[in-house]
Image: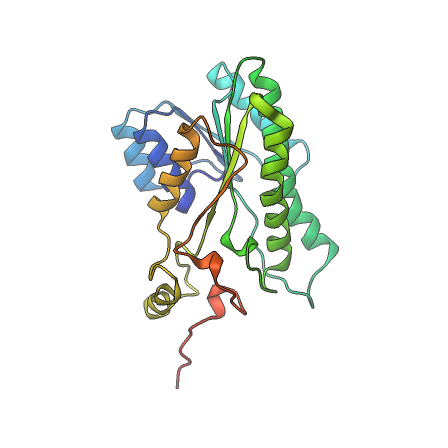
Length: 250
C-alpha cells in the first residue's frame, strides 16, 4: 500500500497485518513503519517489505509495481492507494504547478498503479483496489483547491475503472473525514468539530482501516465510494476544518 508507514496508512497496514496479509509498504523518502505499526508487524509475524518511490515522477508507478513483484514473486492481491499530496492553495493562489503536482500524486499515480497491477496480475486474477479519497469531494469548499480537484478526479475514476477492468479487478474507495489532528488543531477545537457531525463524532484511523479491510475482502462490491466520516459529507461547510470552530485568544 502507498503511504502505508505512518498515521492513517499505518492503521490500515496494521489492520491488514492482523488479518493475515503480507504487506508491501511504500513511502516517498523512506519506508520505515512507525513504532506502533512495527510492533504489530512483529507480533503478527507479517511478511512485509518497504519500498520507496516519489509518485510525482511519471515512471514511479510502473517501477513500484515491478519492484513489489520482484520481491514477493507475484502480483499483489490488494492495492491500497493512501499516499497523497496536501498543500494549501485557493482560487487566488492556484498555479499550474500546484495543479500538476497534486494531480500527479493524487490522481495519475493511483490510476496508473491500478492499471499496472491489473496488467501484471494476469488472466484469472481479480485484485482488489481501494482508493483513499476525502469526504470533501461531496461538499467541497474553496480551500486546498488543487488537492480537492485531484481527489474529486480520483473519486470519479472509481466507477470508470471498475467498468474498464470488469471482472479483472474490483475498484472501490474510502472517503475519510477529519481523522488525525495536526498541530494546527487543539483538543477543544476537535471536540467542537466532532459535535458538528451528524453522528457527533469524527472518524478514527481504526474506522478507516476496517472499511478498507471490508472492501478488500468482499468479492461482490465494485465501483463504490464509502464515506467513513461521522457524516461530514452531508454538511456544507464554508471552510476547511482547520479554519472552523477556533477560539481566538484574547
